[in-house]
Length: 94
Image 1 (cartoon, rainbow, N blue to C red):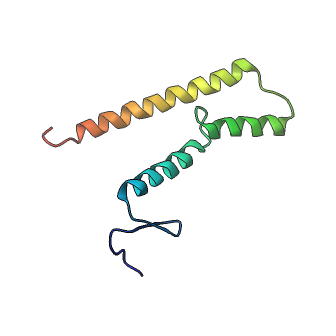
Image 2 (image 1 turned 90 degrees about the horizontal axis):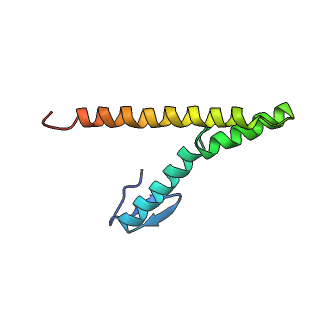
Image 3 (image 1 turned 60 degrees about the vertical axis):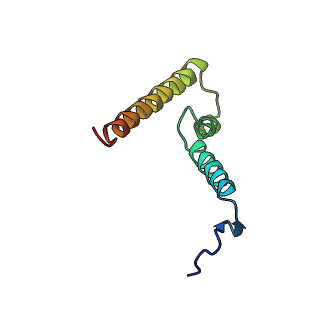
């Protein structure tokens, strides 16, 4: 195993000397992966709905599609709130 020298950060075979560039690249890749998840409010959810429509060979009603997106959005916001509460509870001094 080759160890890192001189502050170089290897990412996809490229050595990035600046830690900020490494952080921005890692953040960008992470956002892309999370955005493609098949969850309705994200882009992956839209891809999933388009695939379902292609398999069924007919369009989903606008009301049903809106309900799916709204439900996914509510679940996503609930997860954000739950994780935030857990993070606050773990703060030192509490």
